[in-house]
Image (tube, rainbow, N blue to C red; front, side, top):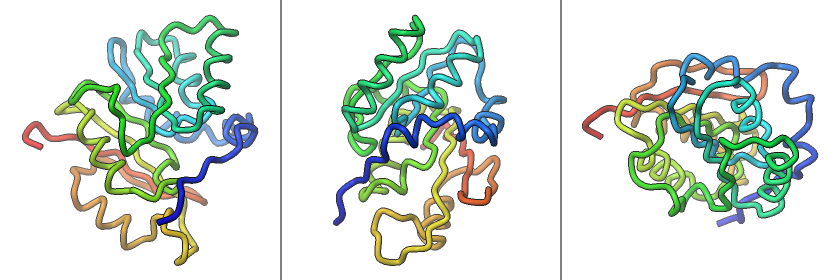
Length: 185
């Protein structure tokens, strides 16, 4: 099994990412006052910061296993005086600091394709998501058959079949869906 990959902070924090307005424009309808959002695989917090800047009263749990990314996010939070983001240095397949069924919305943008334990990450996503909650999951359109971290079309379709998909799509480089956790899961 290959090690999880960490992308450099300068790539993950680049303002070029914002040129497409994706995925923030897709998830905006699911964000509302009073909810808890988990940004799993947040890197240095690009999307966590975008959500915080929407002006909603939300609690954002920003999770990444890379200590350098969490330090960079913590510095952004300090510099900008942001109170609603809590940085958490943990892997997506073992988020021990977040209780069961405590999160209303999960953003997991291009995180699975950096991990070797896709199953563990999806189990944790479902564990922390409240019944009736939503999760945005996306992966790169993989071209490599040799990299176990990539999520190919067959695996992507197997993952999707396990959930109630409310919306899905593709961009030039990624596949995505929004799922709703049913009350009985």
